[in-house]
Image 1 (tube, rainbow, N blue to C red):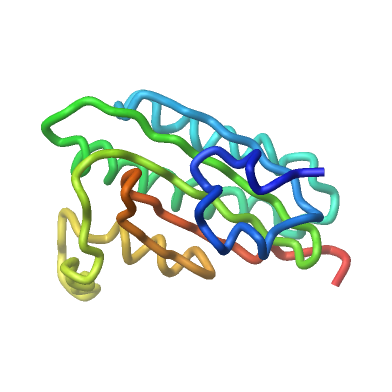
Image 2 (tube, helix red, strand yellow):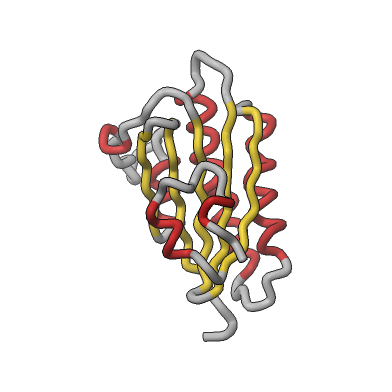
Length: 163
């Protein structure tokens, strides 16, 4: 049985209780460098690959991969723009209801999501789509700056073949 204290970087976050006790998790800690970013999303995809009740697995896994990569690239390029650091990810899978919660934790520069304007969808724009895409792909996106660093929480209600 998973205990809240087992979840590195999540123990002080009250939302973790919503996912216990019928859940599984995987944790990963990587250097905050662009070549390592795909490892985070690959880990989550591998974690969910054999989930038999997952409906539309190709679409769901692609959307999760894109959301994780967008936030992780932003962490590398903005939170750690002038310093080296690490990204710690925890993916928590709950079965009732079927959903996944991904946390990405870093100790880089704090971020203000409210300061990011929505992209102009009718105009050509080189940057500024990442956070918008993540909010469209995930059911819940939350950012907190805590004493231990920055924490992104991404929640996706997973489509189930059992419904």
